[in-house]
Image (cartoon, rainbow over all chains, first blue to last red; front, side, top):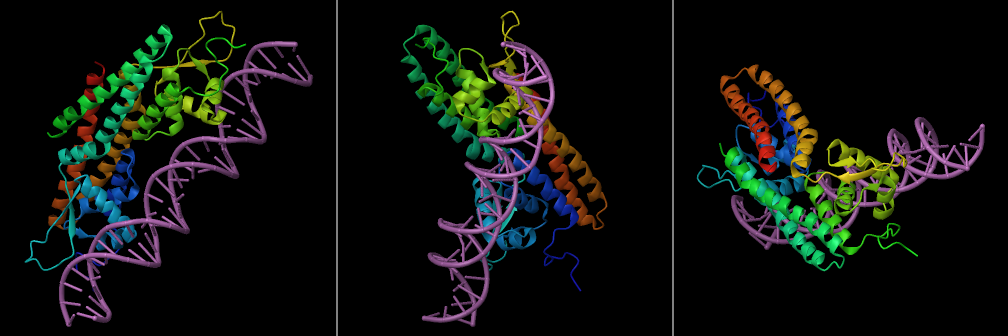
Length: 170
Length: 170
DNA sequence: CCGATTGTTCAAATCATTTTGAACAAAATT
DNA sequence: AATTTTGTTCAAAATGATTTGAACAATCGG
């Protein structure tokens, strides 16, 4: 005989499976691996925080995956450690999802978008320097027009981000 | 003896290579394959339209890649066919890049983002229906709060897109 | 101190995506 | 009509990313 809320059952129930599937899809659009979606999805639909071991058992993934997945999600600020409100016994750490869109978007931008924009800006500066050394004035004009445009795109991208965050912050 | 603008040289010059590298990086962030970045990048930095065959030779990619890459780029509205301004001789088609950010962003949103948002919305509706059938009122309350949140995220995503387009359209 | 528990790391295996290239189709040229 | 040119398609190969699992470290309890 099992308790009503069957924490020892390893399998996901259909609703949980469906939620996890939504997140697996979602993270693929963002270019993140499937396991990230599985982990976050299960945390999102679970009423209480889960340990690494819970994730391993219920999602049937390896410890390695769970560990790495949690690390990434923590770095994004998408999961937080739920330090047991118990008296400090229990050394196992439990995780819960951050559920404010603002936080999620902010973390994603900070970790996954900004670094690319920054390295892109560097490369475009190098490009501009090279273009200045092109002999033929006609070519140089064309190339600098294009490279300028590229720089403009980058700057637009940079400007969009805070706006995005502002809007999604409600 | 070769003409000054050496169209028969297969190799990219260093500047072209650098531009292509920037686009290869760029499209990876968007989750598109490398060849897409190579093709668009070379078109972007080329003073005249290029044919499929030019792309194959200069980028040293297969005909198949070039053909599929061009198809995707056309569907995004990122390259357009430059119908020779000649008298209709020349049956080979040449391609040039669309260089207005607005167009590029619009195409990407239409082809790569909207479909996901739409199928996501469908899935969330199914989810909501299932949640209504959960017996335990406590659980049902929790689950419907979470699923509502998910729906809210989706709608936020949908609302952001036109704003993005407006801002990037200058 | 020893064994059990919890979690991390990283090389190897697995899996998914992209690229290739051969076969084919369509249209133009001889 | 046969050949050449241009381009598409798609199964198989190559590539690249993720996942696994064994080895390891750290901490706790007995």
